[in-house]
Image (cartoon, rainbow, N blue to C red):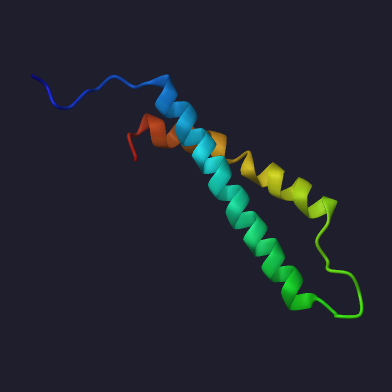
Length: 76
């Protein structure tokens, strides 16, 4: 019996891409909230809005090629 299965599952590829996107969303959200907290003047509204959310979602799309690279080179 062979313990090292060399078949690459598409489900694993999708899972890696999804989890990388989620991780990048979490990191981006934390970094933008931290930046907003550091520059926040208390008499003005909190500087986090729709523009930052769109930027975070664009950056999170980098999870797709990252997941593909991880899948190709069996990094888990």
